[in-house]
Length: 279
Image (cartoon, rainbow, N blue to C red; front, side, top):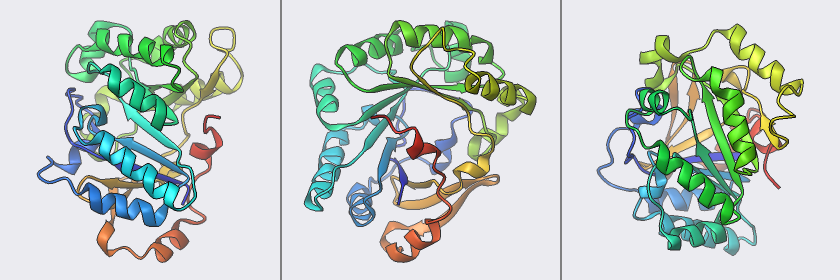
């Protein structure tokens, strides 16, 4: 299995109107031991831990430590990418832990403008995010800046890339807004025309921003179908893949036949996520 995204908590400091993971519901019980047992059986090449906001999960350290232990018991090294809004204060102890345990800190930053940030995030925590980005690079973490382009912020792309250069982040992923899961409900406010998305993709591929940011820029994917082989598991232990209607439920981690699952995903998992894996 190439890729697995573990949505480890529903808790978050933000109130994004387009939050896709809100359709997981509110966490009543954390089934993380069952999920980690599933991860142990699968041992994906790349594990993304997201939320909600994983950095306010009180069990985050325990979860990551257990996952690493499972890989080491199988004589393998994990590739763990932590996906965060970086909107909360982070202790020195946590910075040290992340430096020692994860391979990529993926920080989402939609805007450098407080008004736009607030429109997209529901609250204004931009200053804390900017502090954390600088701290992350100072600590020597492998930092990737994720920019989801929407009607609200796509004109800021050049300034965001200048900020990425200034703060010495390792790479930038320029995403796109897809109206699926809960995000479908507000698509008129956020979804870009396909022609605009195509222009953004072509500009990146043709090197338009090379003089602004000389690190790796990952362009948006061209269609949602490229994510259909990207397996997700939530804090309840439910497995699913995204599709145009929201998400396709595969089943619970306790009931899945790993061999059947791996076979069904063998040819469908897109290469884009592994292709750009940071070294």
